[in-house]
Image (cartoon, rainbow, N blue to C red; front, side, top):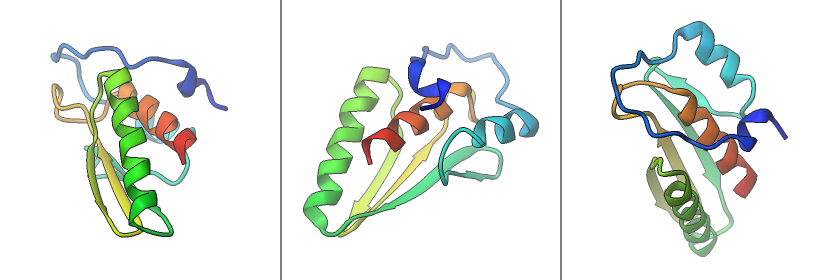
Amino acid sequence: MNDLTNKKCVPCQGGVPSLTEVKINNYLRKVKEWSVIDNHHLEKSFTFIDFKSSLSFVNKVGELAEQENHHPDICFTWGKVVITIWTHKINGIHENDFILASKIDKIK
């Protein structure tokens, strides 16, 4: 378990800069198989054996998102879920995004 899973997402008020590329890369080492897209958001694809399993995972991620008050974009179909995370208030990546990514990895 990494230290990110022990943290809580904190509400971002905006006005703070998004993480630098160096900081993003440091956090990226703490999560499994997430990609950074344009230094703006995190993304990861998850595969499942059927639609029901995909939906179950999506529902668990939704519950987590509500608990953390940090809501990813979720796209799912038969056997596949794609999750995209960024902090809308700063239009970029924040520590909260990595906290959520780390906790999502625990669900799968």
